[in-house]
Length: 290
Image (cartoon, rainbow, N blue to C red; front, top):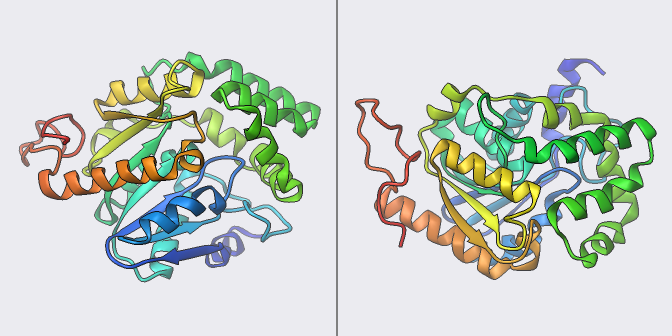
């Protein structure tokens, strides 16, 4: 498959839309797919136009991997999905690695992104200490070398502090989830583990950004990494119930926080900094979040 073929296959990405109104694009994380948002899509679809999709290679649509898993290429995928649904702009919910892609989308296509709600996302960047994730990164690399991919589910559950039900849900549809795990290890693993953002690029993002951190996972690697990221870039944080899988476990509570974020963004704009370059709008904690 050539890179041109790879780019053309973006139009094949599975996506679904529910509701009308302001657009919310939902981007899933590693070892997952659009089903991660199935419950909140129905809830938020009562007030918004919600769009979910399978990132390149994920889901059970494809029998061969993509060539390019870069965050830049995946940001372009997100834009292509919006265009497919005739949307000119959107708020983005980015779950875990999906949040990294949301941030990259805002950096590359600032006119398309109105705001970003991150869920325990780490944004690797120079001078940002993310040593809390080294154990997970090294373990994943070893699993990839051993080719015993079944080990990654309990490792992931341990890292995020998930309950046993998490492992059962991941194994429920074994064909789909094993395919998703293979995709991560043999597709985007190196991008996820080794990529580093430019601090200047992140600071230039003009839309409001908020970081959701789970109550049960805030002292575990992903939660610690998310909090360090938010503090480093001076993003507002909000605590969510449960652990890293809060979107599925607490859909009503999570949907409430998303609606609140959009309402405050529209009415209060969260940040009031002007065009003098002192503080990019949306980056700081100015304004009232009530």
